[in-house]
Length: 390
Image (cartoon, rainbow, N blue to C red; front, side, top):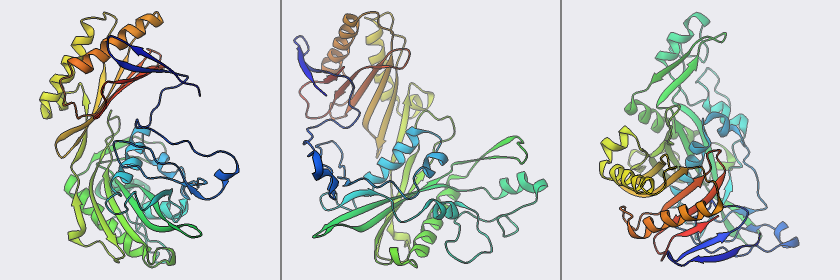
């Protein structure tokens, strides 16, 4: 792809013109060698980014349980947070300077499906992690299905494995593994014969307790397998968002087990992360100051552009503080000049009238009403001015 660069003098903003907008963290990326060299086992080139990102072992190997999590997680937004969040919470166990990333190769789709099931009378192989029905089995009479599912919900929705590799003289070998246990905060199930769908809100303390139990059982079972015998294991609990939520769920706990055979109570570390959707009643109640700043920014755009009909934002909070924010602005433009003028105004607001802390990274995606990406504006700590990508 060829990139052209121009300068908007009034705003001192660097604008790159090209065929697509970048969706990876901003930074300088080394050129990956081409030709036969890429066929040999190695790792992708590192990029300088706000967060710690692992290099990936290449050639790429799809996960052994590929596609299973996608079918069990309701949105791509949720799946992205599960996968990238697990990487984020693996850095304390597997240093990105020493380990490279590879998709999970140990548990197959059959293994994961088995673990996600209800406990039954079978003792061979992997034992399901979700609780049995009240009768102690994984089956129940059809006329009791709804009542028994309300009594015995499924707590574990999905399971994601990530592998962390170390370099050896002969290539890369498996050095550790991380698991995300994706938990339900509401249990959705359908009655037999295409009957009605039921949604049961689950008690959060009970869900977390079940998550800890299932993580411990998972580690204990895997230690009996030769391929997990000496591996360092890291586990994390992820609370799935309710159906229809505009924001993803969040990680709530993690534990580095190392080479132990179980997860000890003092291994768990609480994680304080959450997403807020702007504008929303929840954000107005729980992060009022940030909600007001968001509304003020929106008003300042509307003051100048009458076709502007509003914007939506997603704020990521860690330990009660805003860590980053992404804003989507759908708007109809009738000329390229109008788009450039709109971009200049938004960049000017970011530089001169941005109410949030300047250390908080912001990404603004401007799209047409049809959803086509028009421009991406990125302003992060260390940047002299926002970067603009048409």
